[in-house]
Image 1 (tube, one colour):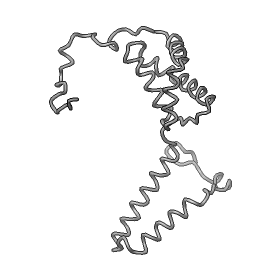
Image 2 (cartoon, helix red, strand yellow):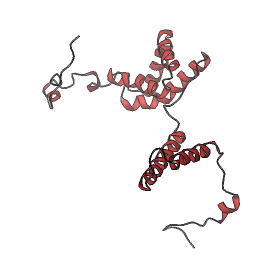
Image 3 (tube, one colour):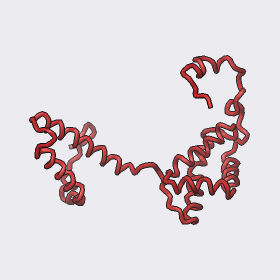
Image 4 (cartoon, one colour):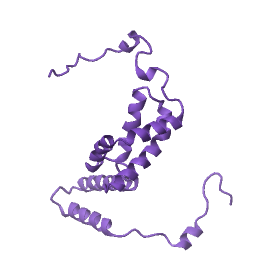
Length: 182
């Protein structure tokens, strides 16, 4: 098998030299009604071979959201329906696949990452970067007890449950900003 070199790519503007409407997605879609698109995917996903292939991907911890997106994007690329029709039926495809895989006894991960967990990790990474920079500015190196103490504090903070603000403090908060009356 030959490896593609740096010059084995289309040159800029090359797509403008081919005949227009030569690709399936440049043609009018085969299905214009969203109900027809939904029926197509229900029938398509009723095929056991297709379900087995998708189930294998889910069992390999591939989240369901990118699978659903690739399913309807293939329909767009084949000229079966428009991108907006695919996006409209995506929740239906997602729910259908999730129900089928749950019935099969397969644990389904909906999206690649929990947004709350991602935000907490990003905040912790920012804190660690700033704290490490502060320790380096103070002249402490990797072996100093400052970094050890910092990592112990981070571990202790991760183990503590989050406290909620008392209701009294919530009520005392006054509106602020340009539109606040007072």
